[in-house]
Image (cartoon, rainbow, N blue to C red; front, side, top):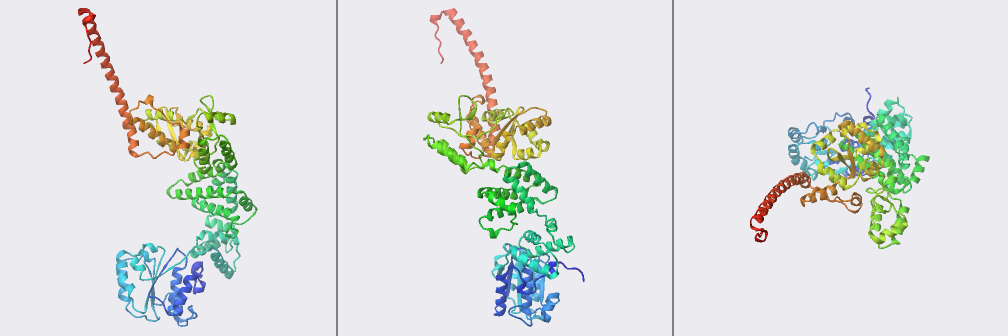
Length: 632
């Protein structure tokens, strides 16, 4: 006999064999025992949860000649015929390939005939949501009032696609995803019956990969057994499912907790070289961090193997760290659906996760700052900014109280300097950055670029963007991939960073700045001044520029806002499309206006010179005392 897949050989033949659907099976059994069966049923639920198997068992129970406590005997002629698919009274229809109105009309014409052998004629329509609108309409009347000896069982994975008029004519049973414990117990039973040795951890990997589907679990198990010649090991299960080993997940999380970016990127590259799927890696990582989160709160819910490394990490990781990591993983998982460069997203993710300790504000440090500010009240500005920094660690990284002290450069102030300045004027709180001459971060530099910006220059930068990323290292490329060119002239270019923290890293990374500057010079043949700002800063600077253009303020008289204050003190409104287009229109108008003014000035000078000559000549002819000049 030809080999059959495990899920076919071990398909449930009794209600008691159904895994994880006790409510459904008990209800169906009671209906058969009390002879209160309906004329139509709707079985809905995820794939591989037993919908078709339950329909066949129910059909056997309806036609069984020796029913026992609601269970089919599986030995009578009718049960045997249904098992082999030779009973004409049980008709299985695949709605995916028989979804037309003609097929339903054929059912409607034949349904009036009595069963030939069994007690009931049972129609099992699988994937019923695939029927056309006309087919559903043709089925309505028959489904509502079928002959007494006919039972319809509709099975679907997408009940929302079925018309409400159909659902209201049926008894609906929702099949749930099968729990891992139930899947494990079923696979253990099958392997024990087949006398096959297995690794318990391998079964856990398979149960996780099945995602609540028993058929999927048995298919993966079958594949793993074929791969290892009827021996189930952990390595074989990992190879077949594409899952990541817990040891590798543990090393990756350890790199994150230790803020070791290089180690994290190396482990990620190792995963990618092994051909691991990006989505699967994110899922496994979410599951591992979830287990770390629950290890101290609800140990019984932990699925991971509780070895020494796991226990150490569970004690080390804080609740806020776990929340943040899971949130970042979830965001990347959603973004991976729409990209063909999953490796870039994973690299950026690794850099962000490994620098979480830099992003959050130390609670002890914050409390000290708050207490220090309280000593010098009223100092509401400092208090508000510190409170905001504690609540919004994703926007602002590490904070120090900073004030301008005798000069243009900003430095960390001492306690005495803070007391002195606070008494004189409100203190501003800005992020700590490492300044260099390679990049600028002030609003005036952005204004100068906007005044000389051209579409051609910006297009050239955008066209060279991919080549620029390829010329950088992996870590540098990961940082720059979070930025975009928004304005460019023949001397400077503005890069806007989506994430404030990546912007913080970029302005401190002199090596990155040097690489970008050198690479742009090679690609475009010119040396450019780099300007790094955040998305919020760009929107407000651009808004300010447009407002001043509308007010007809001359370019040399425009006042640019201070970027550090913008990032922390305000949350700019989004610029509308009209504002964006008006930048160029207003700029052209200003240039045109300047040209017109120059021409008018030249004419006025010539006119005034001519008038002076006329006055002088009149005064000579008639005398100064006899000449009166009026401007009328």
